[in-house]
Length: 392
Image (cartoon, rainbow, N blue to C red; front, side, top):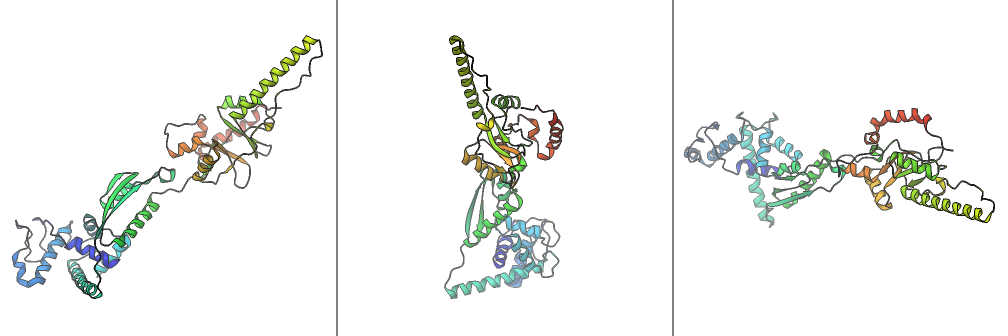
């Protein structure tokens, strides 16, 4: 991999004739970079091919020495490689610099640049001879097109493909972008793609939220002895569509939704109408009126008893799948390993986390904040609990 990177650097730095301007410094005598023809001065031929190569390398070296320091720094070499659309990992780039920088001062002097070019030319000749002797052709340069798309999800909200692909002179939308990378050999494609994945994981992916991070808490609950009228009053007063039913130990034993309340009210109305007909018939026949017994029934008799629970440690993806598979709109949240009620999660909570509807809001403003911000409300609720209406 290092040898491939070195060959790329030779092509990027010395394989092109840069357009030299008059302000490029003279590194060696005989280099006329300010001539109108932009050609190396013919005086450089007097020393033979070796002198001409040094003059040409001097002009190239001066062109890429953008800060005119007389050295090539890492940023200048990296910019040269990127402008030539050559792909190289950070690890291989550091190894490449170390192989050129023989004195270890962190920058490339002209003589180090010349030695590096000469060494690579010799290696290329031997590689060509070896390939010919072994009957194999050198790797063919190729172009790889990279297309990226991001599926909607709360854990990829910070992924920016446009910024990620800019290293290959690509771009597009933050969630849909493309780029084209020039490869010296097709075998490099896997390393390029793996590098992109590693960078995404390191810089863009967030740890997925847990249910306890966005659930509604504290949550209103019902007692198993409450009647249809009392449950309906809670639904109307707090504008909710479902309530968990808990026992004296705050453990979830059931769930009641607006569907169960509607069905219970209909049964209660039927009972009242039946009682009225019995009274009318008794009066007409002169018989004793029927015994006046309570018609309302406790919620424990008509609530949902098989309730799907979610532990607060579940991830957002897990509880989302739970809501889809069970076709329910709300799930009570319990402490890990117990049935102790700690909160409630609904489809609305999931939509809010996905940012599908930015205007979506809670009816109860106290539920729209983080759990840490709800602590004052929780404490106030505990202090006011003694004023709650007691239902017999």
